[in-house]
Length: 114
Length: 117
Image 1 (tube, rainbow over the protein chains, first blue to last red):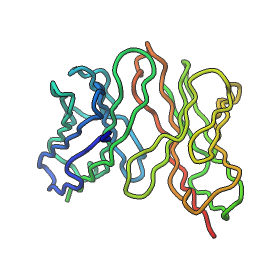
Image 2: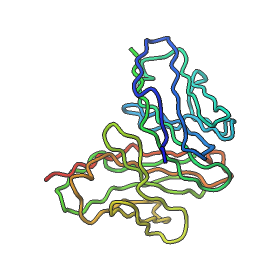
Image 3: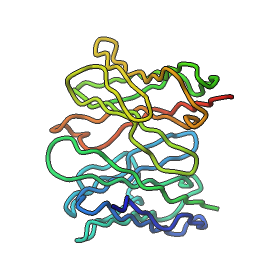
Image 4: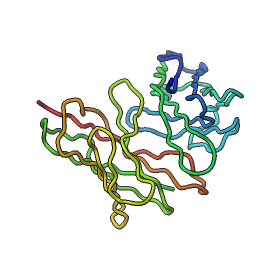
């Protein structure tokens, strides 16, 4: 069974540009989560989508946004990129519904802003 | 809101020695507890989890952790480490269903375990 996949692996952008990161969940999973792993800041929760809706959001400015498509894949958009947005962005997926569901992580997209 | 503190940023040990990675958490509500491992240039892999029941939980690769509610700790242990255990380890908490933070994992800052031959 294929795991969580993310694309691209690496992304280099210039300050002020927009970045789009993509995530495909494990088959059968309806929830997708996004996390940022920045140097010195650790792993921080960004967004949670389930059944196409945003369920929870971390303490990030509105220029971080995303969506979940009908096939449950997800996109993270970062507008007006700043140097401090450089980080590894991890996507995770899980089964949906109430109760605990294990989050399975993808390999990440390394975003570098110059 | 919850928070996680990993008390050691780096832990060097020799191969076949025991190791303990310390984790303390703070939360006003009941939580689930986790340990994840991250190998260089890879995503996170779940080592073990505490959801309920026995406070001693066993995970993959010979790791175990003990939940101590009174001390709000969830320390990770392995009786004998291998070179291949060299990685970064993250402790995390997740609020149980019904809360405003439900669904998200809150991570500690990570502990880099280096196993020397």
